[in-house]
Length: 242
Image (cartoon, rainbow, N blue to C red; front, side, top):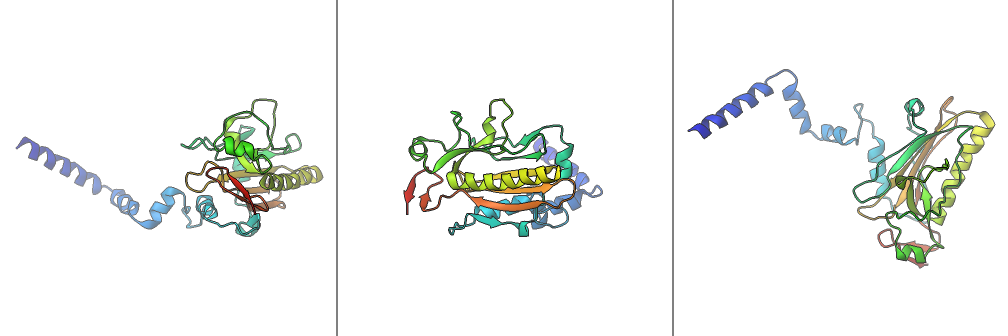
């Protein structure tokens, strides 16, 4: 009898909560597709596709011997104003549950230009195994944010990259340096490391940049973590020449 009374009391409390203003609407929204997408970051409150959905789509792209995919007609959605207000020199995302680097942001300027992002650090990182070590003609270690400030490179600022990916990132980072040197403006930069499933080696990197002062300079691209004339395995690190 006491147990039944307790259940009834709990049901009454839940009913009272549900009839409060806006509560029922919120509960109902939780079970609609649109609200699930908003909560997961797939779309924003205005119904626009967010970077999270874009990155999910990029992870599903197949490589067809074209190293770059232009994203959003090369228009960046990077919020450089928010990044400019940050007190940090740069921001790195925490590693995921599989110990993989995820990405980061920075504002480049005259005093902090992109630097060579290939690193020969002995740090152990996700995906760097004996198979990868035997194939360093293809694989290298790359930095998410290409700066060297004299300190030890953070563990979440390194990932396994092909040589072709590294060269392509360096090409676009040089464009940033050239623009800054020509205009003395600042440029926001974001790199998001894209993985397919549980692979420890990324499928590619989503990179975007935008000038802070005038928005005259920007790009938004996805670079595959692939090597010309090779088939690469992002799970094992094995490579096979075509």
